[in-house]
Amino acid sequence: MKELREIAGMFRMDGEIKEIKPLGNGLINDTYKVITSGESPDYVLQRINNAIFKDVDLLQSNIEAVTAHIRRKLVEAGEKDIDRKVLTFVPAEGSGRTYVEQDGKFWRLSVFIDNADTFESVTPEYSEYAGEAFGDFEAKLADIDVELGETIPDFHNMELRLRQLVEAVSKDAAGRLHKEGRMELESILADIDANAEDMCLAEQLHRQGRLPKRICHCDTKVNNMMFDKDGSILCVIDLDTVMPSYVFSDFGDFLRTAANPVAEDSPETEKVDFDMEIFKAFSRGYIRGTKSFLTPLERQCLPYAACLFPFMQAVRFFTDYINGDTYYRTDYPEHNLVRTRNQMKLFHSALEKVPQMAEWIGSLS
Image (cartoon, rainbow, N blue to C red; front, side, top):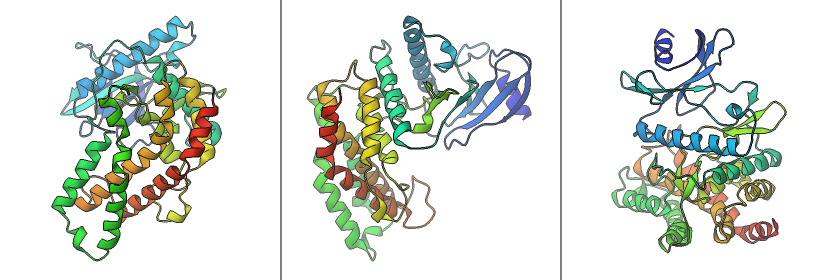
C-alpha cells in the first residue's frame, strides 16, 4: 500500500493517513478507502480506467462542472448538510486538477460520505427511489451553463450500433455466419432489420430539432444512489458516464436490467419478461423528478425508451458474437449469442406492453 499512500499524498487532503483498504466491487475502476486519523474526513481513492475513459481531462472536467452546479443548486434551495448530498473531489497539490497521473495511471480522490448505504435490490420501492433520484439529477443539470463532452462518444447512438452490425456481418471475421446454426443467426438478423428503423426514432427526432440532448447519468443502476441511514436519498454517485444524451438513456437503461427477472446472460429465455410493476414504480418516480423540464414529446416517448435499450444491447451482443467476442468478456463460445437471445426476448416483451406503458405514463401527474 506504500504506492497508494504516495498517490493519496499528492492531493490536498486533511489529516494523516492511517490505513488504505479496498472499497466496493466495481468492475471498471480500482477503488480504495483512505482512512485518516483524528477528526479529519476519510476519502475514496480511485484509479480511473483510461482504457475506457480515454480523455481523463474531459472526464474530470465534466464531473467538476456537474458537482459544482449541483452544489450551487443545493445552496440556493437552502439544503443542509450539502457535503453529503453531492460528491466532493479533492484538488491535487500543485496543479489544482482533480486527478493525478503516476506511471501512466490516473487517480482521483473524493471525500468519503460516512453513515451512508447503497443497495443492490431491485424492488418496486427502490425502483421508484431510483426514478426520482435520476430524474432529479437531470432536473438539477437542465440549466447547466457549461458545455460537457461525451466521455464515451456515441455511447447510446442506435444508428451507429446498427452500422457496426452491418460491418460485422460484411466481414464475418469469425466465420460464424457460415457455420451450423446459421439459420438462427439469419433469423436474428431479420428480426433486428424489421425493427431497426423504429428503434432509430431518437436520432430521427434529434435531426428534426424536436428532441434535445440533456445532461444524463447514462449508467442508471439502483446501486448508483446513496442513501442516508434513515432511508432518504442523499445523492447519485458514479459520475464517469455523465454526458449529453437523450433522456431515454437514463430511463431505458435502468429498465433494461431492473425489469428483467433474470440476468442478461441467462439462457432461460422462457423466464425473460418485462416487469410492469418495476416499470410503473420507476416511471412514477422519474416523472416526479423530471416534471420541471420534461417535454410532452420526451414523456410520450418513454415507452419507446423501454424498448430501445434491450434492442440496442441485443445488437451490441450480436455484433460482438459475429466479430468473434472481441469486446465483451465471455465464458463460453455461445455466451454472446445467449445474451442476444435474452435481450431480444426482453425487447419483444416490452414491445408488446407499449400500450400498457403509454396508458400508465398518461395517468401520471
